[in-house]
Length: 104
Image (tube, rainbow, N blue to C red; front, side, top):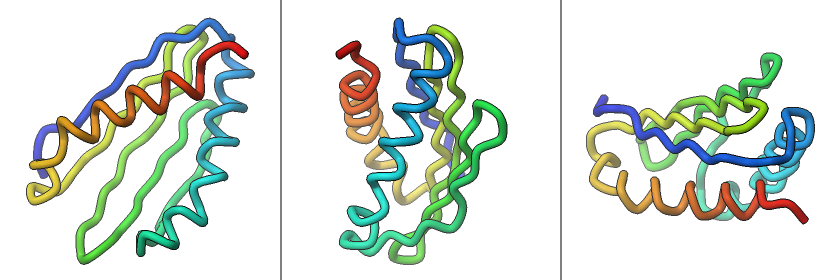
């Protein structure tokens, strides 16, 4: 495993609303993952932390999303092969996460 990819996204939603938006956003990924051939192995909440593990093409990715009152911290552990795409993934997670957590 390579060094974990970490993205921290500030928000002004409060803990409950940020958690709800993350849960709703993750719930909408099921069909997208299936179409892309990504198998969800684990997707489970423990209080305000979402642990996940997904697999595709023999590669496994896992991590967690920690929802806090003013930030959401995403940590993704990528296998060495996928770590080549870490910078692009970090940018995408930051952009999509910010859109999800922007006040509406």
